[in-house]
Amino acid sequence: MPTVVNCPTCKAQVEWTATSKFKPFCSERCKLIDLGDWASEKHAIPVKPEFDAESLDALGYDEADFFKDN
Image (cartoon, rainbow, N blue to C red; front, side, top):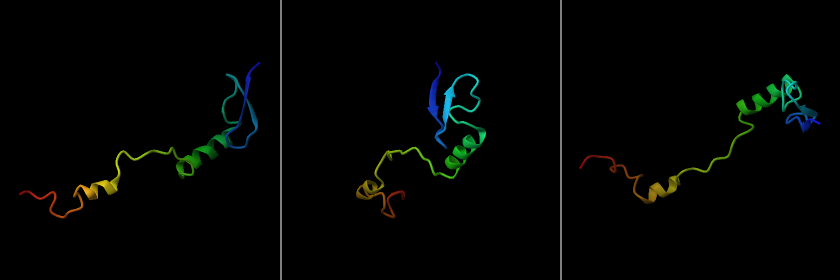
């Protein structure tokens, strides 16, 4: 018995088989709607910044003469 999943866009049931051309989507239309949502940044993968920009201020990186040669 094939696995059945819900289409991420319209929630219709889709059989997860080799013949399901647009899996996990039910149709090309739902696939393109999802792609458009990613392109317009309605969907995003959350990321944690590698450093805190405010901590750079405490280190003196905001000083105008920090990068000048001595």
